[in-house]
Image (cartoon, rainbow, N blue to C red; front, side, top):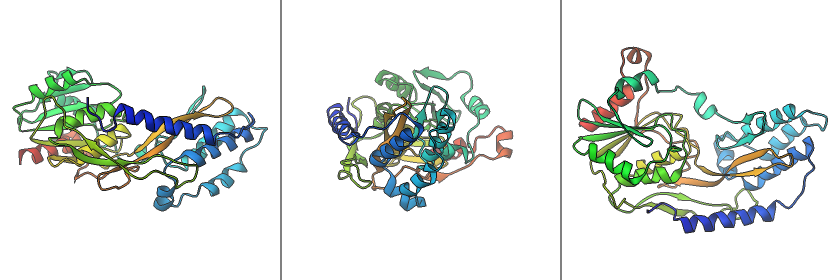
Length: 340
């Protein structure tokens, strides 16, 4: 199976990065609130991959963040109080891939989706999908009454195999076009996203770039490494495609939208995606709490950062009036594009 990053090259990249972690994480911190605060700030300072971009985007100053939150930390505070301070500090990064995991709670930043209209309706989904749809692993699919194929993929955490894709595309083979609805898809396995995208490309295509950390400085990165999508050797689709997106399209799903956007026969329809273009890694604090953070930045084919998502080619939003009438304006816009 051809992938954007071969298993060998990815293992080399990951091994190099883990060696880098072992080299820079050589300072021991006490298992106290102050020690855990210092360990977390330093860990993020050395490993996080979007400092330069976010300083430019909204003025993030990680040194300023340190002084802002250090005064809130005391060795007399409880675990609950410490968790609140550390979660608030990490939220300054505005990154859905940055999380603090404990036995009592899960620190997260979800404003990337919660601060925006949902542009998706479970009721409308059931109306358009009906009851006679087919299921192939994580795919649900059917033919709409205007001979447009409709594929709903809710999460790339649910794997889809090559045979599943063969069966799905064979069933939709006579359709005029295909709608791939990934709204509310929060990501999952990037390999699965690539496997699906490979069914819609006809030749080796540049779809993006990637860099990885080479040192502890905020700007210490490798050169941009091109990422190519190879066409699948199995059944492929040659006609038009619309990918439906909203703000809850994140991580591997955001990357799927980025890849598909680079293909000539594809239009992105709906809302701006949620982003999450940093490949995450995990580490731990002295008290055992787990920390996840973005470590390797990824870019689109024009070398643009996609950490905060990408725009739709055809922006469309749901309205209360249309939803009450049983009409999904995003699906209808895609049907119109494919019919033309």
